[in-house]
Length: 213
Length: 213
Image: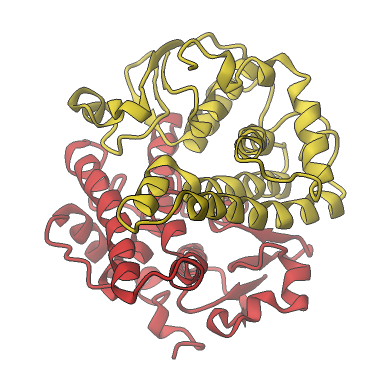
């Protein structure tokens, strides 16, 4: 397996965590997003969206979109499971994951920030305000859920990591990088800390990657 | 089952299609997004994110996030299947779905457009340009995939509707509403037309809903 990766990409970070949890040592290729390597013809032939991550499987299939990749990993390498055994539990875990992967992260992607400051002429302060606004909006709702719902454990769903934690930890890392005040989100902070005690999460952190700058 | 719905929500539109494909007649409640009904205390107690759709199941569980809901429907009502039988096929269908549900739709959500024109003071022309930009960017990549990949059939994956089509058709409807030129995307247009020949898709269209205005 070969992962097309970039240390700062929080979508790639999710896949790095999942690979670590599954104990899979994938080959790595680094796509330097800030230098525009994702728009090189070679990479676009692999992934027309020009985004990371992409995962090339042993049989040569090219998988894209981080949540689809993590579900594929979970289906093809079932131990340890990253989704609960029951349908309601799976729906809860996917919902938490998607509340981050659909409703926070895409709004704060590099290409979106570039559109704000470039095409729309937003200031850096406006860009950073935008970034924090969507994290706060998403985390306020997520904190309420995690605090209120009995399925929450040491991790987002029970005591073992799932797809939800795979999404949460990279999002918390982004929040810290943009100086979001996390004091209003004690459950999120607690779960993030518990996950990062596991090597699978800690070793996937951006600054531990070979391409980190 | 009870669906919390809004005719214009393309995330709710996905769930309406899936319910129709599964032959499930769910009770409906309408949350008027433009009047802010999603921020009423009663609805926030149900879904702290204040977004539609939400689906309350027979056993009282509240499911949120459209893709999580559709996967739950597929797991609990397996016929007809909305995901392929093989892991690579499922990864492809989920990737297409997420390229819409993560990388196009959240950028064009009502709350995002309101932030652009309100907080950032964008003009209506800038807002509409933003809307079309993200659809074009997403559709350019998706058209390339659908045109090139052999798994594409009458629908996004083979000849029967999947989760990918459940996401594509509402996104094409949004593109038309904002006058996006669809001529560069003949495969997308062809698949959209094929799907809309099916009553499950046609009956889920925004203007056919009881709350349509």
